[in-house]
Length: 454
Image 1 (tube, rainbow, N blue to C red):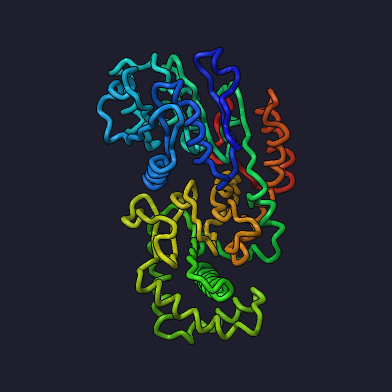
Image 2: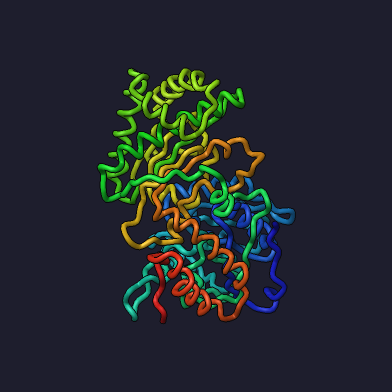
């Protein structure tokens, strides 16, 4: 679904638009279409590409490979390559500059300073805030002070004289409840190939309930053993049924504390080493996974025989990866290993697509509050994985009942937005929806970074 220019943009110098997508529905593609569409009528595009280096780098590379225009050459720049924005916005340039910036306080202050120094507030700016519900919304608990990143973004928009500002997100709940005044809200629905919450809730035996609690490490071991065995069985079954050199990923989502990532990596490494040396040690877990997945008896022996090869490949490739803001292995890209086990928290929860995902273990179990936008972003199994896509036949997600309830709540929330996103009183109606219908059906449901009511 292409994004078209809004009819009334030519009549005003400034416009702020909230662009709502769905998780893993092709948001970056929409942003690329947006930039291409405005490349001939703007002087520069500035894109806040995410709050992590991994996500910003992924956006930068995607732009480099896919961003084209029929009317003007487009050149992509990162902030470390730009000393003088004026040089890139000169009317003499035959190209359209796109600056991709990580959404951090220092980077945003540098952008503001560069625009100020070069007196570019009168330039025609296309401003795009990706993942705009995260860090961009004012979540300060002080009535007289904005949160840092939100404040700088607002300054850039307010100082710009001619600016079209798109705030893009798949979880717009905090944006809608914020004090931001949107000139328009657009909701881009994916096509029939998209598989989201409703699709997977209706998929028999897709979700596997576990008792794991992130605050109780004693519950991790059994959940990891069972989900790891299920991934090995599913991957072996996938190989045997397709008779091809498939790739497969196992994703473990745990809280943001880096030590827990390393702790789980060590546990996984021990398991893989044990399975490699003593294949019979995993028979109990493999047998349980085989029975739970209702694998045909005729191919069980073949699956048992295939699993050691998978384990040996993981060991040889050293493909047990931690993805977080501090780990060196943040260079991981989906598909770089044939079989990969990825462990992380925030970094793997937003924006990154795991094309070869077969199994995901959710150890991010909330103790009390269930934050619908945060948990929705962690649904890395959403995306274009329809019935013709062979891989989704072998997919499973391990989670507890608290998290599963959130994904049940997602459907009603998306339905509400589809029906009401154009309503002039959306903010009040959505607030009432959360406090009554949503909270009544699923007690404890919360919005992350819920803004002040001022």
